[in-house]
Image 1 (cartoon, rainbow, N blue to C red):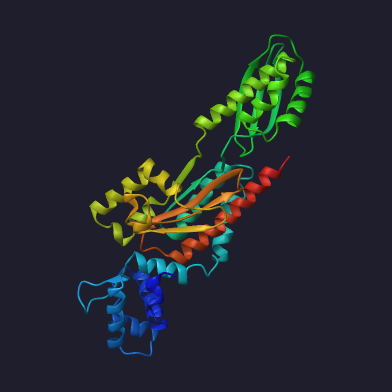
Image 2 (cartoon, rainbow, N blue to C red; image 1 turned 30 degrees about the vertical axis):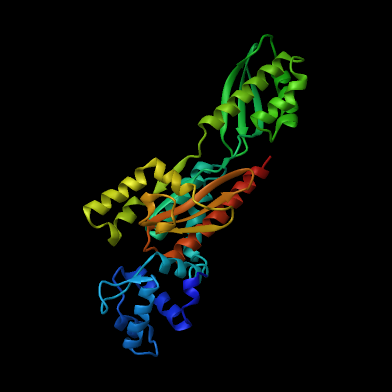
Length: 349
């Protein structure tokens, strides 16, 4: 709780909660008479106006003049998030839609991210962003060797985040499928779970003893290196139309700015790098963002997956006037749901 919030008595905290909640729902400046009528406060509109003047003085709301309705500032949304938004869980209907959209994509992280973004954007009527789970370093989960010719085999490499690469490996000597299968068993036992750097360190003492194995390991490390260079998490973005339907973007200028924000890769990378820890939902409101382009927006974001292994991001981008209760509960549920899928995938043989 901020120092300024401590200065608010319970009545003014309740009033601020009502102002933010009403403004989120209506996008119309909230007047004292409206609050007195809608929330049945046992104080006069004059008392409410005095309290609103105090809230304005503290930087929670803005009003063009004393008798005008109040519009929440970033500090008011922060207060609201800390006081109200963490409480509810999403509706059963939302949970059912998540299961329906994602569970059929068994073992397909790209399908999970795509489905999560679509369901989330429909739920919050703003832009939803989801990335596929990625490990900090590409690591071997399993490899297979398939005989093609006497001196050629297809190397199939499955990485821990369920990404797959394959390449033809030439050998200097003839080799059968049985020999390739035995080699794959030995390499899986030795190298499973290792990164390219780990593989080089483990293999160096035995390098040169088996030319076929050396050729496979050399190709393995090359594929792992290539994956780390090129294998950025795939990103899915849904819901631009939803966001543009919000009152904040009805002018051509504001709509064009919103489109530029969503289509700008560097801005979205900034969104995805915001301070989201594993298992927690982070809310970055307006001026709290590191990005100048996001000062008129809020971001609700969480990481999912297994810390230290494969991790992805699920989040929302929208105007600061956002339904934070629904946004936070939806992102939290999806992050937990996706973490369960990633964990099950990593445990699969």
